[in-house]
Length: 475
Image (cartoon, rainbow, N blue to C red; front, side, top):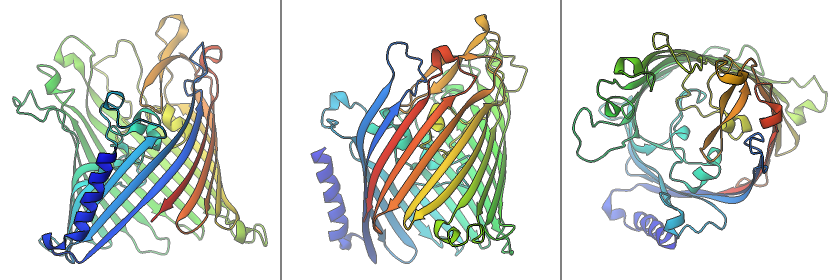
């Protein structure tokens, strides 16, 4: 680790001390240090019959940024990232196989007014998201080479992806075209086409601000994920696994203090899986949908005279729907696959249910209240109710079925579920953030997830709990 940190410092110093290598107008060095403590319990919902699972870990996330303006229209950005639990012996390669103690998080160039004035092109390892991160957010693409990936992947701040973006700004209309390499897989010389096993993401996003009194903004997009690793590369006669996702979003403020948003998206394409003996029986047509409604209302000052202005209370409501599929043991390939693929959503971390379940086959209703009891102290109480869109498969013997739950370390396990129930559970979260200074903040987060009737209370009905504490400084 010392060698890597020294190398990182030398690179930064060389960028600062060697302006002769490029015509540099301005260089900015910044960063942050975020240290925290996490305590988690029963994320297996009590599936372990011998011991309750507990996790108690200190960790630190460190970032170092270098941004250089080479000219009025050309800039370059680099960010180094270190994520590690305290006491982890990162210099011991045998116990940290595949992990890098210092990661090149960002490395991209920005070319403004390229070819003509409305066009900006961003090339390299970068971060991006669209709308409310309902479908695509680069924060859901990274993290695999971080030590936190095997401890608490949902807390990782690896949020970048290798991509090229072309942005056309015709204010109030903005068009953005995206190509991202999700996974190269085999990078050596290969036999085409059967040896091509890449995973790629293509997209176009259009946003338009109406400039009306309600500050209405509309957005439309189309994303295509092409996964060749489970397609042609995995069997003769197979086609690639494809997901085509068109969608639209609107945001408006009908009156002071109220913001309403609605988003809907559809999925088509082809799902490849082991559904039969011949290639024709290993492919299903996709037909899924998802939708979301958000509402936030800042209460007027006359609700609590003398207090509302100080508390700044905001009521929130969120409804999220993602369609599910029949989980039959013998799927009928002549029927469409209706399960929503979460793509690269990045919305609910670090809530417990976000770690336990994928955003598919669910309804989520969340109400929240945000307030400032004292200056610089933000508090938020959230209550979420989760239900299944389609019941768990009832065809397995014994009237129960295996239901997958996921863990913060990216592992998963199947637990017994009641096939005729849809109540997935309820979660209560209490958050607080205190701005100690402009540069230093403290945060706490308490969460409690109570499993619903989907789970067998005698085998896996224990509540999952978490407590998170952190202090962060930016410079």
